[in-house]
Amino acid sequence: MKKHMLLAITAAALLTTGCAQKKINTTDVVSSNGTTVPGGANGTNLYNNVDPLGQGMSQGNGMYGNQNGLYANENGMYGDAGVQNIYFGIDQYSITSEKLGQISHNANLLRNSGKVKIEGHCDASGSDEYNYALGLKRAKATKDALLANGISGNNIILVSMGESSPECYTSSSADCYSKNRRVEFKVMQ
Image 1: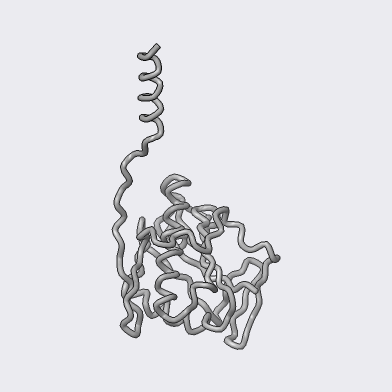
Image 2: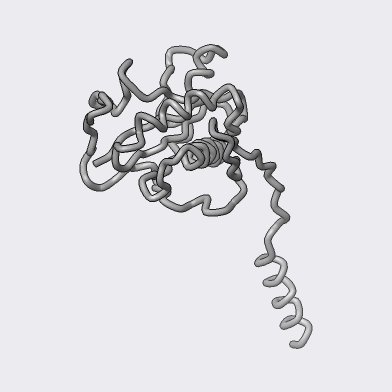
């Protein structure tokens, strides 16, 4: 009886212990004014203001324009008058120095816009789970860069769309896939 009890306890202990987690490298983000904040996916507050199902807010679509000339169509995509999508390389989520100008431009437009939903998107390579996590890392890195540019964290909502909402879906070419590795900004009421 003692052997069975010991075997059951050992089996339960083995089943409930976790595997080692892969260490994720982080990249600090430097704003245009020289302020440095932790970037990448360092795990700190990674899930603050996150909509885990990628469904957005429950207040309708909430899109609107403002004095900065921002506008959105029925899909929430911005036209020439405003915010620029941020595009990433394959398996990348760091905000590079080349992207800082776009981030600064977007921060200036979004500064007085109320809540902003940051959607992280991926191409179709990789598993659904991997792409969801990568989309969230892209959204988090972008949020950190906006924080460094003076946008309040209370006004930012993070959503990972993974590969579920491609910008380009007509082919599986490298050019088409590169358009799907992005972060989009949507202004909410």
